[in-house]
Length: 178
Image (cartoon, rainbow, N blue to C red; front, side, top):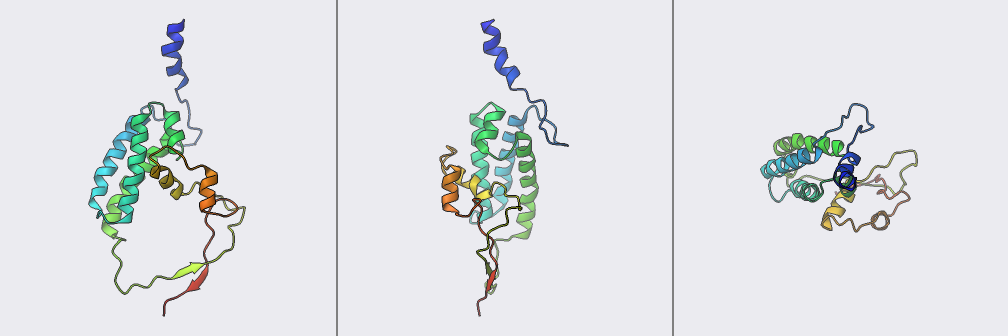
């Protein structure tokens, strides 16, 4: 009986029956699929100039997520460490990024004309409480900065970005260069 609990028990406990999200089926080999997608992403992003912030960001969070997937065998631990949703949602995110990379290479948003004027809009009005707040992208990069240890607690992130809900405040007032 000890043999059964030791080897079969953990395998049975880790089977995911449903994502709980309509239209999002369970992916049995999600870890392997994620590893493949992250490797493809790191290859595809090479088409973007090394100096582009987009490339640096994609490489940073993709390397972090790939590292987590290589270190962890259990889908629950992968979901917990990455903090970006269920593994099936992470697969969709990786597929979306792979579709975006060629478009970014075509659009070249990092090439700004010399005479381009940027309009800055600022407003200290807090975001209304009825507006849903989601885990911000910058939180993912903060975690990637510490090598995936997850040392930044939500309190630490909120101290760096003070507002009632941890989200940056909206910007509204117009300041223009003459």
